[in-house]
Length: 239
Image (cartoon, rainbow, N blue to C red; front, side):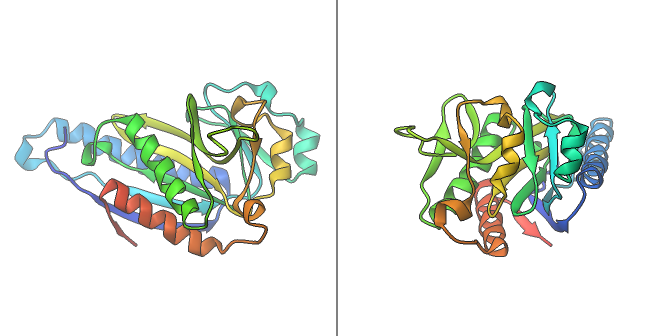
């Protein structure tokens, strides 16, 4: 465990940014934190340094990403189809299957050293889900979880029309996390028709604006999600 606990988290809103550029940015931060942890292990407790934590918010141009456990067949477009949709495609190193990112979607990448908080990856995922569930509740949207499935869903009780509103896929090494969640706020749901979202064929995808029947203030949503994440993780966010 870390000898120096740091619950301060640096928050960065990257605006609209290319997926690959953001992925590289994440990887660099992730590698620096892991390297510091490795060096700390070689030092006496009195000489160890606190590890940093980050929370990145970003919106990506149209892109499909395939996780380590995903199947390429779940992408229903060839290269010409991707070009027509002005979308890119990447195989990446998070868990999970295929998902879509694009305009109108809030993507969050917490790069946290969980040894500063708790060493439980399931708790980590559940708290991220809870931050989205609490945010949706502020808009009168009842959301929850479906057993055996990651992410945040609507119609989780009767499940007559269960639909995902926030997908999640993370990577963790030495208790340092990267990747994160994709929360549909004003997202173009038609883009999900070009994949089998998260490998799940019998459930739909939705977005806040479709559920509310109006466009949603994305900056307002960001502030609410930020606050809930900070509260749930008992972190101190700094810009």
